[in-house]
Image (tube, rainbow over all chains, first blue to last red; front, side):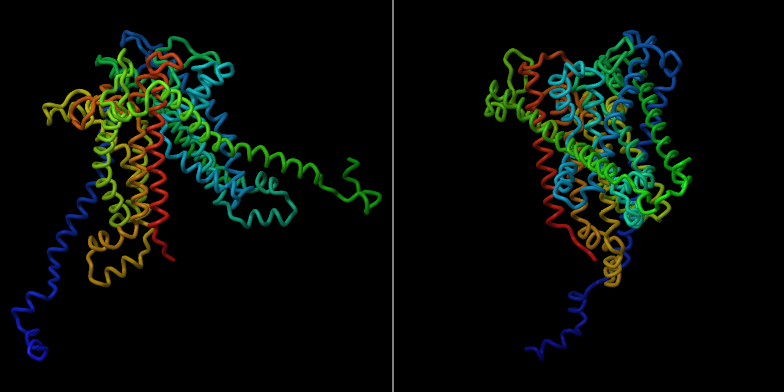
Length: 306
Length: 312
């Protein structure tokens, strides 16, 4: 059998059926199509981003004027402005920084410098990665139950303080992770040199490691803050008002914020309010852009001065 | 000035650092910062306890069986019915549409950035994509309701002003950078030697990517997709603004629906007294939302741990 079959290997007919056909031309054609599709997919996101920005600018630029920035919201679109929302957002920036920065940076330092490798660090690490997956509206429910109801005598109920605390909890994991990454980037030789001179761990951290890591910490925390400023859902859940015709005098006052005001304007049926919403979006994006450029400038300046 | 003079007795007046102070500071810092670290654990505990406590109250009034089997969601009616699957079906629909857009587009973008783009292009395009990730969700909501829906209505005549399709598509755009960025990290970290091995066997670039690089990066890609799914499920403003406020069981993407998150917003905007059934219902919905995202996150952890490829 084997003897008879071996010549058939050289039979033209059979070799055509069994042998591997490289078909390089077809495969390379497929390759070309594949790479073009990949290129298009990369640009889809960017094109949509450009479309979105252009759309907002075209609709929003006409309503942008000094009156818009300094007036209170109104039932008449031509008189409406967003001063209470802008002031509310600035209050929130201040309060979130006040709570989230010291706590987040302190926690980051503790985990990275004092408790590295301990069971406590493990628990918190798992906990933080879980918290990162919790939808922001759930934080709103926590804020509603804890700050608005339970701690009402301190926070004043549906107040800026409750909003600031809720958003601070929301961005805390981001601040902690950013701090840890910045600290991790500082070479160990610096710590060892300081230890060798007899410094305590806190002296090492506060005098040598933290100054080195500070640009990174700062950038990460400002980015976390800009996340907080764009958040709408948790603030609605804890009961930020959509119509406020006064400026808050203190942290226990009722408040509104830019995203809430935008949401309110978008959800109205009249076209005039939609233009106001676009104007509000431009203001919000400018605030975000300012914060991001502050982060980048600070980082560049601090890195150069060393 | 006296302190700068050489001490009369060298053996006793050597400079002595205040070690007691340093040690006490150290202890204090450790305690305070440790307490700060505990805040994140307390947040989790707070979330879980709040949800459990209020949801328990809710189930005193509404039997769990009704919650799971009713086919109506009418919490504000006199004859209130709480069929959570009405809301879940809407969430599933918007999330599915979002993933159908974000998964292929995001993955292909990741492949382009990692495998085809030069280092210069990659350095420019990746931050540009991350700008998209930084756009606040209320802005996407505006875009979905007032820009994308009218455009879609031009092509699909039966499309209503509020619909799951446009909300889902914009939701997909909003999670696109997440899929692209995290998948790109996973694909980029596949060692070059594997690609070279594949080329050496005569495979083309596409064959190498599809049959060698992607399988090697699978755990990272799956993790990024699951993260994106859980983000899409919890996303609020896009679906509230663009998908509408009509609780409706079914999977028709052309009509208004109400997702779980949209319901929480609707009740929060109204004036509902604490302890009322509508107030409690948002915690029950929140609990459902929390459990779904938790299961997804745990699955992602498990998957990455089980299927992660290790290269030296």
